[in-house]
Amino acid sequence: MSLKENSLLITLNISQWVGRKLDRRATATVENAHRTDAKVGNYNKRLLPGAHELEEIQAHASSLRKFYYENTLPWAHDGARIISSQNYVNFTSEFRARKQAFDSSVGKFLAEYPRLRDQAKIKLGDLFSDSEYPNDDRLLRKFSCEISVFPIPDVNDFRVELGDAEKKLFLESMARVESDALKECYSRLFEVVKTASDRLQKPDAIFRDSLIGNITELVDLLPRLNPIHDPKLEALRLEVNSIVGRVSAESIRGNEATREMTARQLGEIADRMGAFMGVENENA
Image (cartoon, rainbow, N blue to C red; front, top):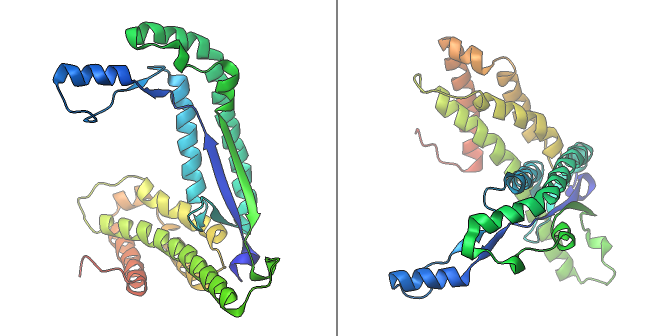
């Protein structure tokens, strides 16, 4: 199945007021006090110091970006990413829930904004400048969280006649994009499998539940992430799933034989993947 048949392009756009400002007057004061050369450093102040309401918005934004990158694959350098058709419904459903949490935190912040600004007058002292604080309407417009979805372009989509050379370049470019997207899927699987096998091969190494949980989450996601339904990737996924599906972090900790077997099986897969991916074996 081709990339165009199985995938879409998606962009995530998040904007937010960061609540920071370069204070040139304070910067100059520091430079004069310490007799430093210009541009040695800058004084960037928090306009609302200690405002956990603003920090909550930033945490939601960071979580949204992480979720976006986990569920998509690289496309180009314009900010767009590839999302498979199989993952689109799951992604948009979860995105709506996360956007609602983002918007809710923005609403809470806006309600507290007058109070936080008054507190800032006290906390910032002479560094406070009323002109650096947007009014409520301007502040509201600084927050947004949206996704945009587009079809994968096809050589037949162009409205102008392309010569054979241009068509060839376009098709070669699409082939590279498809290859890079698939490589990332393999790389993600290799990374979690290799990390777990390396850790479990050390008898005294302490590990968190996430060591196995990260593999479980990825093998659940890969069928929706696989951009062209690559059968080799699916076979590897099933093989890894058959291993981690029989164990848990607790059972591995409590049974040395289980730990050794899991480490060996995951290590064999990591070695095979590393060989065809061109990754050097550090243990060799």
